[in-house]
Length: 126
Image (cartoon, rainbow, N blue to C red; front, side):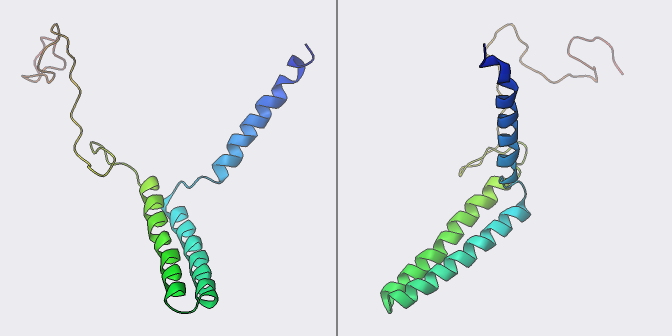
């Protein structure tokens, strides 16, 4: 019974944990651009160190690889915060989503009202 007495402390800790995680979540494109800028600064600095440590072609290739990672990470960040357009499926093969039809035979085939009626069941004409 002693363990159940302090259950609210666990809930408070979980709620605070969610708030702290929310602070480090990238929510807007501006935040994504700022993170990309910070990654780019670090990548250029690391590439400069590689060119000092490994003079010649080896250091240059490592520096190019460091800066190339920024393009991959930046594209991923920007894609993750871009709002999805309605009717477009996410992914590399974006195609228009089709409405899912029921397989029931008791349902009408046409879902759109005809003749200006408010609903398919209504007999009222406007």
